[in-house]
Amino acid sequence: MIPKQTIRVCAVLLAFALASSSVALGGTIVGKVTYEGRTPPQRPMRMDADPKCAEKHSGTVLDQTFMIGDGGAFANVFLVITDGLEGKSFDTPSQPVVMDQNGCIYTPRVMGIQVGQQFKVKNSDGLLHNVHSLSKDNPPFNRAMPASVTEADYSFDKTERFRIKCDVHPWMTSWVTVVDHPFYAVSGADGSFRIENVPAGTYTIEARHEFERFKIYSETVEVSGSGEATVNFVFKPE
Image (cartoon, rainbow, N blue to C red; front, side):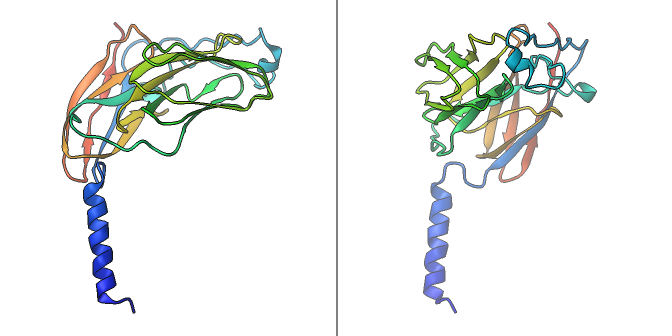
């Protein structure tokens, strides 16, 4: 039998840990992103310039700019809290954000990362690739990754959104958003997203797609306790 004193000490330590955590037992923001209007076409990626890339696929590979599914479900939209977290600080995750070069495609195409978090770039193709960041607030990098280089690590000190491209294979592209908190998400194939452990409060959440002609959408959402708050976004052609 565990002594009562030991149980009390453990309970006090647990309560202290929860109270001191900036994201402990928060609420969850859920929602869905949809596209309303004429669906932009998904054009084939022209991988013929490098037959080794084309050989990695059994059929035609479609461009991933507009990933629109049934019912207008809109994938690869980046969602992030932009207002309401002032005065709060958050630990830097110990796990890296990973972007892989697989099938001559950057995966994932859209991602978020916290300031100071490790950004790991992998090369699973066994081919020559190039990772060229178009960052401005953070030092840009432009690194060749031949088959012998399977990983490269980076980190970012400032918040910023930028594109990464491959100078060897021009169809390869991805978008990185560096933020100073963990409250962001990317909409999935069904358009849904989920942001967990959000402290109680009122927030502005922003939805942004890589296509620059789309406007940036924003909504206000209130999170209370450990429940769920729902906010949806509808993108329309401009």
